[in-house]
Amino acid sequence: MTDHTSYIKPWLRVVAIVLLAITTVSFFAVSFGDDSAVEALSKRGSTGTEVRQIQTKLKNWGYYNGNVDGIYGSQTENAVKYFQRKNGLTVDGIAGPQTLAAMGISSSSSSSNSDYYLLARIISAEARGESYVGQVAVGAVVLNRVEHPSFPNSVSGVVYQPGAFTAINDGQINQPIANSAYQAARDALNGWDPSGGALYYYNPAKTNNAWIRTRPVITTIGNHVFAK
Image (cartoon, rainbow, N blue to C red):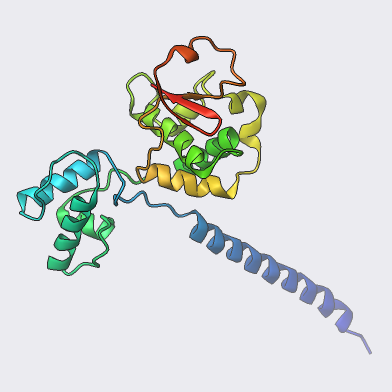
């Protein structure tokens, strides 16, 4: 009698391997998606054009009595909460997608995941050993350059601008990303700028660049001097 089990078992092993592979890929895809999603929402501490749009709308509608200055402070937060309460939205003081839609504002602060990861990567490469505030400040410098007419108008353009960052030249950009750099990138994208609007930073103990030392200093965070 023919023993069919010798034919069945290899196929079962193949099926089991395929199912395991699919399950593993699905798991990492879901986990990666959950961990990587980033929404640069306007909230307390944010600054910029979107915040001014929010303030203008709320002021015109009588929800906000403060200045239209592009700074998301306590007055703006309270005005957003008031608007949310009156319009049946979740009252959290954060101008998320639903709140912005209710205001008739298209989110201009949302950044693609590619920008988010590249920002986290350059933060990790340039400031892995710095304090968390110092890491956010490095991310803020990148974003400040994106907004400045003297620099490329994209995160990738700024990061890969020739001679801009030591980490590109010495290969540190290719090292694993520190966990803190991911959150630092989120905070920088959400408007936190501990650098005070700096366009440059440098480590005085490591740079031989005479020009960078002539730039007006804004603040010092850890080993980095931040300048205009």
